Length: 250
Image 1 (spheres, one colour):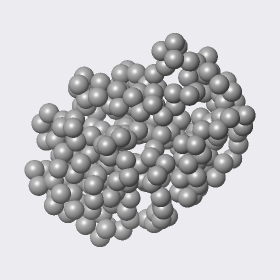
Image 2 (cartoon, one colour; image 1 turned 180 degrees about the horizontal axis):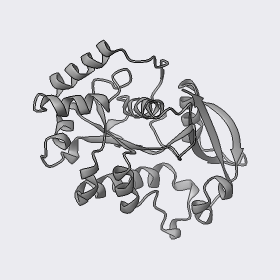
Image 3 (cartoon, rainbow, N blue to C red; image 1 turned 135 degrees about the horizontal axis):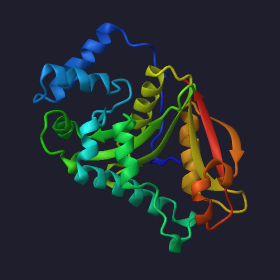
Image 4 (cartoon, rainbow, N blue to C red; image 1 turned 90 degrees about the vertical axis):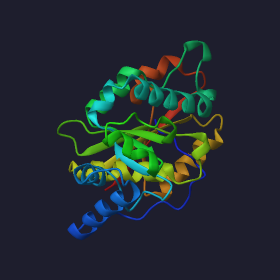
């Protein structure tokens, strides 16, 4: 499952291979935006950001492994994801089931595996690379990338943006970063799953979200059952639902 601001429009332009000149310029831009970074940290941050997709309001970085031991940071990300899904998907879940989209151990593992993208306000992002306490107020959104060994299809989900940051292009930045992450690992496609009504009822936000992904170049490749696509959540579903599976060639 993925979540984003369905009001964001006009994503996206196809990525082209980055030249050394553009990579160097991205390094310079990170230094300009984050003057506290030293050269090595700026290079690392630049290599894990998406210059083509990140709007001026955000810098997207791969959460460093050491953040997995930062309990406050892990808790903040876990609560961000769960709070967004609790509101946006409340019609889908049995409230008494105590549904949560993710857990702190999940988030810790994503960080250790190098699979968690974080969108920060530019002035806040440097803190995770210079050993300072992470500026949690500067976290604007996050998303989880995955790629199974031997697979050419990457996945992206658990994408959540702070309500106060809606309309700033944060979701677009996270999705663009995830696609670059996948291409760097030689994936040829990106797959998303969107929990959706089964056709007997409507969920306007999900309709807008699917349209947003289609504008980003994603195509629905199948409709699957919750039991097959999201078996760990099937027992919590309150209304007839199915899963829209979308893919994009990278």
